[in-house]
Image (cartoon, rainbow, N blue to C red):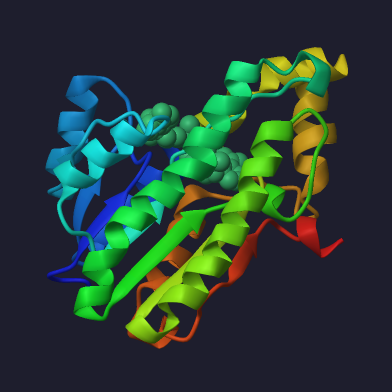
Length: 250
Ligand code: NAD
């Protein structure tokens, strides 16, 4: 049902973004991929999805401008690229703070600012951002990430209000822990910050948050993103959908 629509998914060479890109292409969208990775793997993904890849670094405003120019006008914008760093606030490297705020928050402002004129002009558009349970709750040692994700939830509400009369919706999806490289890579730092073993981090920190005691699957996030693009979702605007096994219900 998305034939003729162009979808840009930031950070779509891995994890949740890749699952969203795959699902959007399965329902007919022309997908533009973005993110890092080995050239052969990216070529393979482009072939599989019939997609193009624009390799911009979204930690800079210039990088986002390059991406938007390379992508061309987009009908569906998925702000998904993100990274994590785990450290106590007094040891949190300031450059990590800056990079996480730039990628996880500011990039979504810049992509949206540049995508909105085309969406408004045609009277249809979808802006979907991958927020996080950390847009609603905090965890210790994740100052930059929690600040950025709360910011995404706020930005989404503002976009929703500004664009409501133009056929454009803005929503975010807030997964709990999804088994992707982003989660796997934070295990060693969490072990150090909390003085725990790998098993303890998995069971007592990560899965302890999720009453289902299961990791969320990237495809589950993708299925909701696809639904938000449907005509039936035209009145879903400014929402923040939790997919977290019940974490934020507490
Ligand atoms: P991931 O590490 O598997 O994928 C991240 C993607 O972003 C990759 O394609 C990577 O190349 C790209 N990327 C990283 N730095 C970039 C940069 N500077 N410029 C452009 N692209 C860049 O991570 P994931 O778990 O799939 O996370 C995707 C999103 O979902 C993030 O915003 C993350 O915060 C959010 N999220 C993840 C979880 C989880 O448990 N995995 C939970 C909630 C929210």
